[in-house]
Amino acid sequence: MRPVLKPVLKPALARTWRDTETLQFGAVHRHARVVERADTAVCSFLSLLDGTRERPALLAAGERLGLGRDPTGDLLDDLEKGGLLDDAAATWEALECYPQPRRELLGPDLASLSLVRPEPGAGPAALRGRAAARVEVRGAGRVGSAVAAALAAGGVGIVTVVDTGRVTPGDCSPAGLAPTEVGRLRATAARESVQRAAGFAPGGSRTAAAGRSAPPPTLVVLAPRSGSGAFAGGAYGARPLMRAGVPHLYTGVVEHLGVVGPLVLPGTSACGGCLAFARTEEDPAWPRLLPQLAEDGPGPARTPACDGALATAVAGLAALHVLLHLDGTGPPSVDGWCELSAADGMARRLRLRPHPDCGCQWQPGAPA
Image (cartoon, rainbow, N blue to C red; front, side):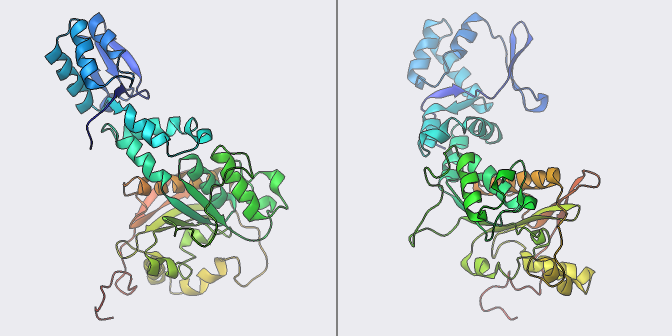
């Protein structure tokens, strides 16, 4: 981590007085930090930590306030070690990765990153990583379109949505496609939804790379409108992603159950094939059942059950897992998956081990 160039007190932290001389930063007790003996001079100094001054100027200011140069340096060090300081210069560099319409919208996201990544400059560094990422969402139903919008709002540089056909009422949700989009091409409606979430007028600044020079996606979200992504229904379609080493996340809602995961890191974590093997061990008929969950499977047309609140919760959780991965934090959908039930509102995580018969973990040259 580089030195803090322009210290600033993290604006997301609540500031409260525990007593007349003890200032608390942060509302959650187990994560809060305190500054003791916070007299008038100390409070005056804290007000100078607004990101406009470098450390030498702050040391001089502390001396003028009567704190003394060395005690001022110790106070700055304590504030940094306590996770109370961020680097305003790093923050500005991160926001410069985005055009103006998005910078103000990303303020709350950057404030959150500064808390979950407490080292000065770590939050802005994560945001720069998001800006450089390209995520492709396959499926523009209630879950997929909302995932795409949440990722765009969270600072992902390029978000593309892949789907065909036209929007139906069943594709609409408060967090994704609006009912006014019914009848429009899904690809067009989803693209404009992503643009709005990123702060652009539809048809304005692009949020997806175009042309043959477009880079491969950083991650792909598999969210088919049938909901079969809840059971890794795209395992066969994910084979090219496995070969290319592209991380991918399965998600969807089937009947009353919403699922996020597994998030597959090819060659490193359990994949959709591993999940298919595991389910087959529980139910030998599973290989016959899985294709019938997909949109193009046999059987009469049906209206997939997809509770709106559940779909929104699943989409939000899926987007959070993607952002955690992009930020360098392993989400719980790696080597596992998370389930949300509309029947009881409960959430749980289930573990998934790489299956020895899958082959996704075999080393080159290893016997089959």
